Image 1 (cartoon, rainbow, N blue to C red):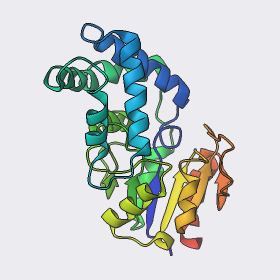
Image 2: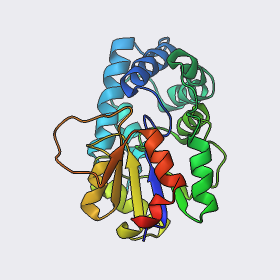
Image 3: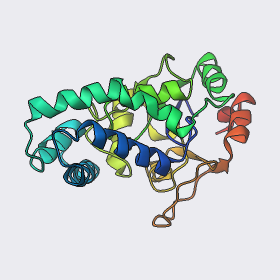
Length: 241
C-alpha cells in the first residue's frame, strides 16, 4: 500500500521547459559573478562541478561539499568572496527567472497536494539535489506549492547523491522511513525519475514536459498528462496501487 508520494519538481509540479530554465539560469548567475570570474570559465566550472555532484559515490560528503570542493579548484576566487555572491543571487536575481520563463502555477497542483495531505499521505519534494534549498523553495513558489507540510525537500545541503543514481532514492527512503513498496514516485524524466522503480517504488510518468534520453528502458507503472494525473489522485487512485 502506498503511504508516501514523492514528486519531482521541475516540469512535474512546476510547469516549464527545463532547458529554457537552464538557459536563463546560466545567463543570470554568470552575469552575477562576472566581475569576479570570466564568464566562459565560470560556466565551464559550474557545469563540471555539477557533473561532479551527479557522479559522486562518497556518502560522507554532501552534494554541497562535493560541488564546493570541485568548483573552487577551477576558479581563482576564494570561497569566502564568491559564495556570498551566490547567496545574494538566489534571493534576488534568481526570483526574476519566473518572469523570464512565464511560469504560472498549474490550477490543480496545490489542490491535488492538499488532497493528498488530507487523505493522510506523506509527500516528498524529490527534486534532483543539485541546488541550494532556497533555489528549490523559490521554484516551489513559482508553482504555488510552497508552505505545505512536506515530509522532506531534497536539496544539495542535505543529500549525498543525485538522480539518476539509485542511491539518491535509497537515501531519501532512509530519511523518510518508508519501504520502496510504500512509495509512489511521480516525475517527468524517464532517466532520473522512473529509475526509482528499480528499487520497487511505484512510478507515474507525467508527460507534459517529458524528458527522455532513450538511454534507459525503465517502464513506468502509469503515465498520463498532469491533468489526468491530478484526476487520478482526486479519485483516490493512489489507494489502488
